[in-house]
Image (cartoon, rainbow, N blue to C red; front, side, top):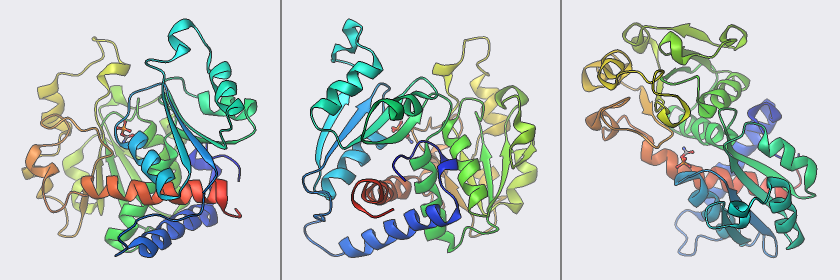
Length: 304
Ligand code: CP
């Protein structure tokens, strides 16, 4: 593979290779004082971010640095994008300076696919509009496998603003590829048209599905992607779809609580749930570095 644009780019063998490579990288670096591998020495990775990010941008930067690549961080804010420069010209400019890999986040769904037709290097989708965020799904799968020991047959409940969630789309696709069973729970207004063709079960009753879940993954309500009339009342949303301690008590003893971040404490997830022993939220972030190292290694330095 040359690019990672969406979860559907990965079949079961590909996805398993990424997860296994991330695990190998983790064990190779465990206990080492200098957490660095020489694999991508002399290669250049550009983080091209047209939308805000904390976790994804920093973990891609760390991942590339730990593989000894040179890293350039580009934010649209403060660049010549403000003077009207297009995505294509921005990308060609970066490529002319020697970028081997471009990690791109953009508010337009499909932007990474367009980019991949313009540049010679590898393109990794770091989140495009409401479309996909494949490395998030990989790090989520890695976290589930690490915590529960398997993915095949694992029952995953994804709850919240599925309509605007690229994380949900990538997770549904990848978890299906990996043999997990996904149930989506959301108010009808926050489910996409066409959900009938997704490989999922749909429910509107979180309390009813929690007792059968191995994993519950909470999603943020993306107010910035909706107009005010669409935005549900926070109190009503929380009451029906938020995960608080009472609801969490419905989960099986070994079930885990996930959230891709950024979370809104008190809205989709209560603070005591986010900070509980069941929560893998901080662990997910750490796993993100290993998984992104695996992706960069396989695309830019490996033999995949
Ligand atoms: N989960 C995630 O993509 O977070 P950021 O938007 O902070 O990168």
